[in-house]
Amino acid sequence: MPHDTSLIGTIVAGLGVAFLMGALAHRLRISPIAGYLLAGVLVGPFTPGFVADTGLALQLAEIGVILLMFGVGLHFSLKDLLSVRRIAVPGAILQIAVATALGTMLGLWLGWSVAGSVVFGLALSVASTVVLLRALQARNMVETEKGRIAVGWLIVEDLVMVLALVLLPALFGDRGDEGGGAGVLQSAGVVLVKVVGFVAFMFLIARRVLPWVLHWVAHSGSRELFRLAVLAIALGVAFGAAVIFDVSFALGAFFAGMILGETQLSRRAAEETLPLRDAFAVLFFVSVGMLFDPKVLIEQPMPVIATVAIIVAGKSFAAFALVRAFGHKSQTALTISVSLAQIGEFSFILAGLGVGLNVLPETGRDLILAGSLLSILLNPILFTLAVKRIRADEPAGEAPRDVEEEVPACNAGVVLIGYGRVGSHIGSLICGRGEGLTVIEDQKDMAAAARAAGATVIVGDATKESVLRQAGIDEASTLLIAIPEGVEAGAIVRRARAINPKLVIVARAHSDEEVTDLVRRGADHVVMAERETASRMAERAMLTLA
Image 1 (spheres, one colour):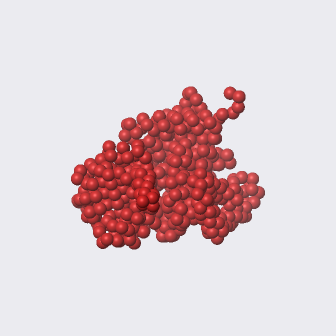
Image 2: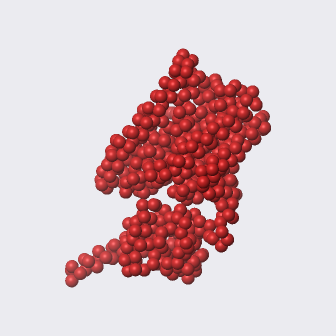
Image 3: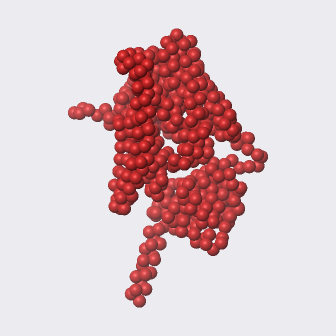
């Protein structure tokens, strides 16, 4: 080739093979994550055929982590973070201590040094950001109490790992050898000052500047410029946080999203980053698969089994016991323990640093990668079993819920999906006449507005049958779908029609194709905004000419 195309080749191979394996996994009714991981193994250096650039893949995966944490921050307010501090901070620290102790014992049993065993245990103690958040988002749990505790727990783990990554060179590098205990204390003090400085900068300066920039761009009227501004803020703050303050990319992106989440543009910002977030999250799983050498499963089966047992069983049991000890329900404890039953990106970074400092043997890195791959594969299965257990524990006759609010089943005659620009006008008209209305909305700010208008609100994903039933769709007379997304609207129409064949469904569309699709799926009436606008404008013009 006339020039280097390793970046293009890595992206094409990663996404292309991931699509094929993900489609196969979907066909076999297993988690697509399994397909993405297998795709990484196929394009990695340990299998024959095309080999993608592992270094580039890891950097692309890091972008996915940044965008994902930015998106979570958009829906996670400072109030939410502080509300779980009493369990997230001590719980995460104690769980890290338990997992580290278990990993240390395994390392000593394998004949490693104490330092190497401790590093190995630390690497097994921190969950993967991407896996945890994808699991919570897939089940609409990010904004529930369970989700807030899990995300807060994850943030504390990230902070502990940032401290560990800085202290390891101080302990075992040249500076640690020269400075001894004083060098370690100095490094720890520097880390603490930098973290405090970063938090202070974000809340004292960035909290004022970033929303102003985003509002200014939004008023320019350019959608392209707005999308670019959102990506520049997410990536720029994450990179600056890592370079200037030595905190993780993920933590920087999370704080940037949390600050922008306080503005009215948070929903639009989340929508603009969603496609890239999904694409780069796939590359993360591919990059994990690329690092995995299948030979370790044959050469060291017992250490691999022990490593996976610590991650899946040891960490989970510790987290479950800690959450229960803090007075939370067993359902909450089970969700959080399963969420943390895997390891990911921080584990790889810590293992690489340990090997580079000649503290952790290369065998330890191989076991960490094997444990990561197998725990990520097992995590969707564990989540499914946990959800079934939670539903089995619910009182008889109670519908399974994917919603945040514990509310009784609704019996309103009209159900409205979406309380955005269109839905809020519909809601104000119906509630203003004193009619009963149930609103399904997945954004907390819009849900609060609907509740203030007098509607009964279900916070959840309307594409799920359980949420529709919770809204009383089986007894409703009319369903109004005000969301602008045609694909989601079609899925809602199909599920609602299957639940209640007599339901009158009125949907919103933006093109002739969407109108045809919605009618085919069972909508009784479809309103296309452009046609209605054109009709009203033409009527006004005719009145003027008369």
